[in-house]
Length: 344
Ligand SMILES: [Zn+2]
Image (cartoon, rainbow, N blue to C red; front, top):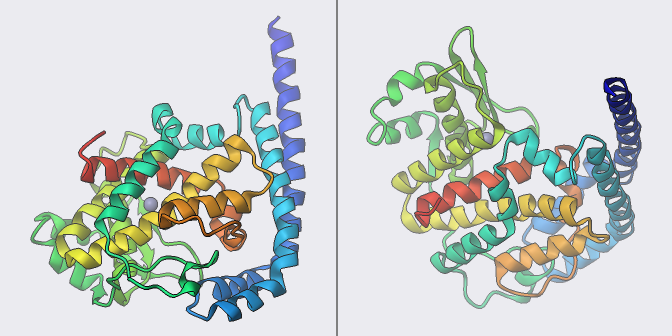
């Protein structure tokens, strides 16, 4: 009996590896259709402030490649789901959740809770009135009336602002080095256990709110590394939740209210749209992910304008770092619920 189980395990493992090989081939097809430089050009068309006509014209040049890449991506989702079944999960979303230790009830309620948070944020933030049509296209985002103009010096100015709220910050910052990030790498915090020191990799110098928010998030990671009991292993979900809570709480204290809310809305939109997108595609396996992506944008914008949105295909984190957004969204939603809605 024991022998049979073992044999089955080996078979499952072989099938898993073979399936992941197939997944690798699909990845390569996507990269061939939309290489890094091309993705950059497409992103530029979709997010810059240009006329609607110009955007449509720019988009049309890449429409064929994007649609082809979407079909490959839909197949990739199926393959990843199949592979995760060989590892004993119902689908790839469940595997992501297991790897990051996202609690079951939080994963199950991620769509419902995201709607509660979106509704809360949409009521809090004032938006620009009389927005011309181009701002409502399938490739554009709604604008908060308050744009983020104030600049802060990272890390010096942020440390001195934090002193008032976190008296221990000085002891902490002695153990933190802030390093400028290279290229389009994601910001991160690295902890050196031997030296009990942290290195934060992010934008330095004078930055407006988006850069500051990112720095605060990484500072949250650093604080947790430097103050928690080292022998306890903290899960990916718990780490993210701590950093989100730390950053949204401190940012609320140090930034002008309107500016803070406008940027919080923008940040929430990025994290939630992409994270819930990952949850839906891996648990419901749609044939047209661009439709799912558009529907999530619509939810945030309170409009039904978007029919399809291919922006996800030029987001390197969605294509190459499966599950990061879902982990971030699940923890961000929970951190926000506890902070703003006083519910756990
Ligand atoms: Zn983080």
